[in-house]
Image (cartoon, rainbow, N blue to C red; front, side, top):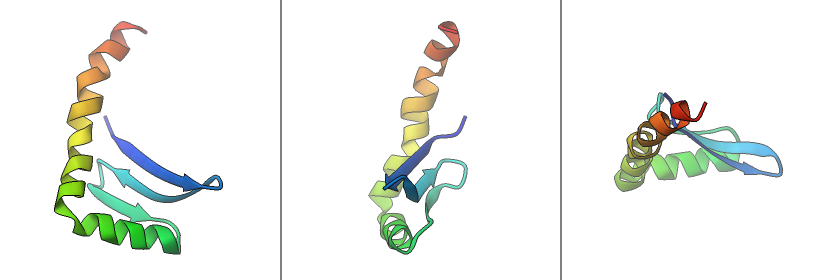
Length: 67
C-alpha cells in the first residue's frame, strides 16, 4: 500500500508526497521550492508519513470487504 498526496495547478502536478519515497518531490520550479520547504519541516513530514497508517491501513479492510 502506498499513500500519495499530490498538488496540482491548471492540471499540472507540481508537488507530490509518496510514502514509498518518504518525502515531497517537486516537478516544477514552484514545486521544488514547496518540496524543499515541506521536507525541512519535521512535523509536516511526520504528518505525511503517518497518513499511510492513519488513512490507508485503517481503511483497507473496509475497501476489501465492499468489493
